[in-house]
Length: 219
Image 1 (spheres, rainbow, N blue to C red):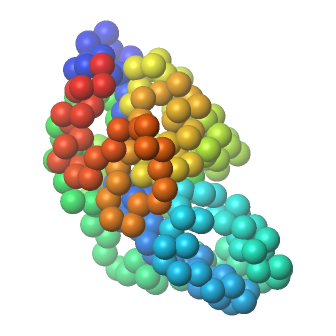
Image 2 (cartoon, rainbow, N blue to C red):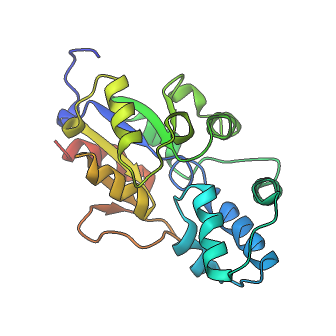
């Protein structure tokens, strides 16, 4: 990594994908709620958000099985993914203020997500922000370690030569916040509408336009 000092001593900013850069968490949660309905378990939107946000897909399916006491269909993963893509539709916009926030951050930026690598790249491309990250895309599927395990964040930081204590993670889910804290990293919790429960001791913000200034304060 370059020896150039970054504002506030921050070397690396790690972004979650869904709910932070692009707004598809609602579609994923609704797709999982659809699967739950097929398995005899009815969930409200609030219950789906609290139960599924930020988790690995298979873990979500297992949670549905535990609560419904019904085995999932063999093609459960396909059902969820196809339902999600149908709900998202043909176009995908980044969350309001994301483009400006990314342009205003001088530190190295990467994405670290529980989603599969092809989905991460597709959604970044569909939202027109892939160029802000290039090859700096890290998927839990590549290392078989999903948040709240901190391994994903630690892998990204190590690969990019950044110290954990000089890394800031931008997350919207409780499992992502937990992973960042376990990794010894500073974390900013994006709490837009429909965000799930969070650690009230973690700094929160509600507009991406605020992010560059907040990162500058973390040093």
